[in-house]
Length: 99
Length: 243
Image (cartoon, rainbow over all chains, first blue to last red; front, side):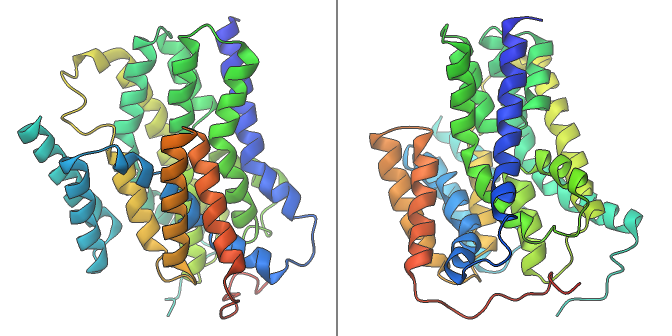
């Protein structure tokens, strides 16, 4: 096998380690302190935010408009899919127009 | 109020999982396609591209990986970079591990291979809604998303050069819109807004100073640290521990 294939397999294994690591550590404890509990409850918002806000700051009008429109949908209680499609439509339309 | 669901009906649970997978497929397929396209453009073969999507199954780190392959960098450094980008998943399994204690151990660690950003968010959302996190439901999502992710890498690798201008089709920014939606899904949680604000500010500052991929860990750490420091709120609903 080529070096590239070995690197890919090693990277896949390393990724799997990250995906079991937290559970391996935490399952050793019988009781979880309330502060740790609070930390874990914050994980979705804290991590997922980093996956779109910095990307948005490098964007322009199409990206910001897409997020604004999606956000308006989400705040009005629209489903995840509806808000996403609305934002995607705005993004693609504006990128084509402002290209 | 949770409706009555027969959580022991594995086929029905699996189907409920596959139903929840389609929005994820819709949001991540363009990203998978883009990865396949860029991977071949960076000199990887179609086979290596598909292997990468199948073995790593984490979009952002795969993009980092193909970027490094093109630069004649030491193998261990490529692996370490992928590990660094994916380090956030340590937090995911810590969280999801709380509500999957009833899964057989071997299945747990097999299942966690598929614990991507959207898989984690959907699982945690189900827990928040007071529903039982079943293995069948989890694999209903995972199987559809995994097959789609690999399939899109293949299509991108083979036909990607046919896409005239990936930029105008928004392929690079669809995933961020989707992640925004996922963040909004959790807005009922304690300290949600302060956590999002801290994470947004810290990750953006880190992104423009230290650079990628460190902004993810730094932003996440800021948001989580704030949650720890906030005064303790109401106790967490313990619906999933009722066995």
